Length: 239
Image 1 (spheres, rainbow, N blue to C red):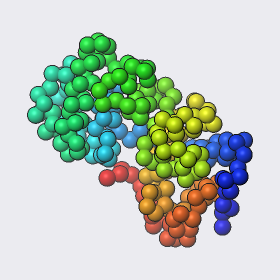
Image 2 (cartoon, helix red, strand yellow):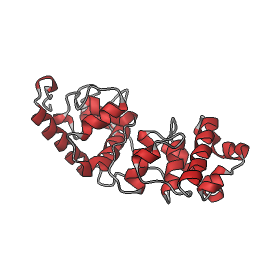
Image 3 (tube, rainbow, N blue to C red):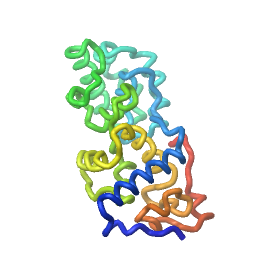
């Protein structure tokens, strides 16, 4: 049985070493980890990320081909017929609020940035409907600027790993960023999201099938029997 990490008495140095070891194992486990939203440019990723709130990437990817064929520029989105836009994105949920965010974001892009998506965090978070999480997704995946994406999976896993006890996404982002090299931030986000979707589930993690078992202080939260745990492992695309 894997050794259970005693995080309560873990030194800062030991935590950093364990966190980096976990990151390395996840890199080996998910060599193809990437953003699972389909996009062709920064604007498309920004819109797709806004749509992904309270919605699966799979559902967003079903909607965006139609959306991006009709609206190709920020000006197109800014001038969109609201009812028509809402009709296209309705299946992603909260479609009225999302339409407001997309149209407002596009209008600001046209007014302040010549219709181009800015490549800086401070400017992105000023756009309607864009918080730090969305901004970091865009920066990391469209501009190659390292960023930590603190979604629900990232929050759950970092607490299970004993990396943080914080619940505020900004505090989690800053705390984790202190012991993981900046160059790894974007890929770490992908790896934790992939692991959360596939093995470290919210209700019943597949502990007995987890490559991180020996390093995780939460080992045993889910089934440790290998056969039972294997049944819980999921593969994408996620619905």
